[in-house]
Length: 213
Image (cartoon, rainbow, N blue to C red; front, side, top):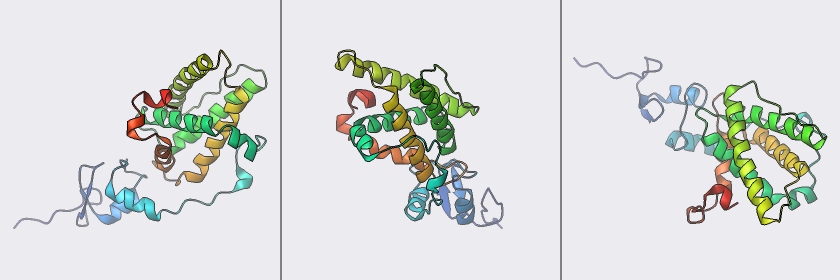
């Protein structure tokens, strides 16, 4: 008599849904408990997509935001809106080009980048490096992309460079967005996924993310 299939994760329950990360059918309970905790869920998983619609993000404590001395006024955000979009796109490019990068890595990377630009604004050349190797790799890729963008922007503006102070404020903005948009799961990528909304339509991407920024 042929035995009934069982979920390969719990080896107990009947598998009822296909998991693209496991490349196998798993049970609904293992799917829910392992989602972005022990399972590296791809963005296009139908069950992840459904879970996103009902996901409750952790409460955001405004009093606990990092670097509260960096004031992001309405006038500053209005003035740097286009720059913020570009930086968001470059963060996405960096995250998607480092294997295994998840929201906690982005949190470490953004904190290190904010500290680096705080030093620059204060006249110090000091690069803060994350201890987290994946976060450090994301930082490396982001800095490469940002350097290219700054060079192109300077060429278009007769040598006028983007001020470090503006980049500091924009990075602090994205740091706070990561805290608000992250779902708190160990392998969560809700924040990274949210950055896709900043990308231009496909017909506008012929020149690449940086060129079209």
